[in-house]
Length: 449
Image 1 (tube, rainbow, N blue to C red):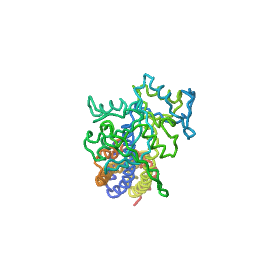
Image 2 (cartoon, helix red, strand yellow):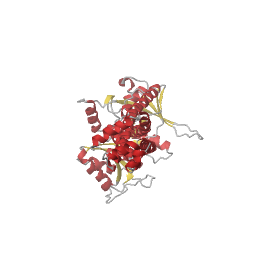
Image 3 (cartoon, rainbow, N blue to C red):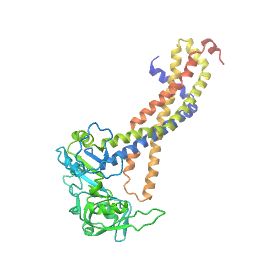
Image 4 (tube, rainbow, N blue to C red):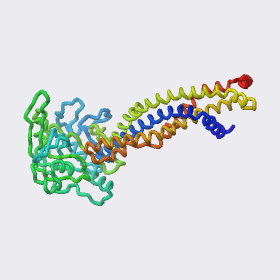
């Protein structure tokens, strides 16, 4: 018999027992639905994290961290400046390090930042606690040229203003600050020109629940507003002078300054993706610093989500294997009901192989029907969850719901692989019943009532 004949016969036999076939297939469908739903959600969240990360980290950008490279094969010291960091694997990012980077022709520019432990900011009666603030060394860029180019490409614009109005702080000693367009609106202003020149209160509170202390409040003049196309976050960038005052207060350490501790992070912007590996190796092996690139982040996220998706899929796999026991039961019952017809088939020339294949194909058809149902259920399931998530986020005042389109996806590959897996599992479940059917004695089968 040909394979298409087996399949045709399989559908025909199962069609005679619709209700039993439906129940068995439905059990398979639940397992398939759980697997596709969970793995798709895991994949969606993975994609979202990578997309969000890529917004802040170009593939041409390498983050140089103030830590020693863990696997040095050759370390060449740039200088012998004292490293005042307290961490055992810390390595100060020195002035000589920055100079060495800027001299390389394959590096477009660098952005040098220093952590600033401010807990809130205030302007008039508006106070913001959820925001990001850092100090930028004014000797280098505030925003990389790559950031500008990326924004132009993304928005298909020839030219984009980095600042809506104003300027960046003049030097490291000034008490000045720039805020993003988003943060400006949270501070109660709609137009950039109206907020320029205002004194922003920067508050650093190191109090804990059991010990209350008077917070430090500094004033910094707002001198510029950053275009949301360049930086869409609630971000403020100030000077080293402001950061030094805040950090020495926050850490209770007069030595915790940019000059003595060094930069917290350096965004090294490479002029070409082809040169990223070369620059990365130079920073690791020659300078001895740890780095983090978009490729590193992407690989780390994917590695973590392989485990997460496997765990999420485990529930569906268990249900699928339990459903396979139902397939065995269904096929064994079918053999008892069709013992006489099996005897007739053998009497007219059907071989053991033919009988075995008939029942194996029937098992596979149950898996296919269940898999198809499960795939449809998963699409419906994901849309229902998306609607619930959308309603919840809207109730919390979230306007941009575009991230939901990234999270709630149903990749065709996942569906096809899961359906195929369901077919294979049900075929394996049908091995015992099909072997039993093939071994039936034709004479005894014909006598079976």
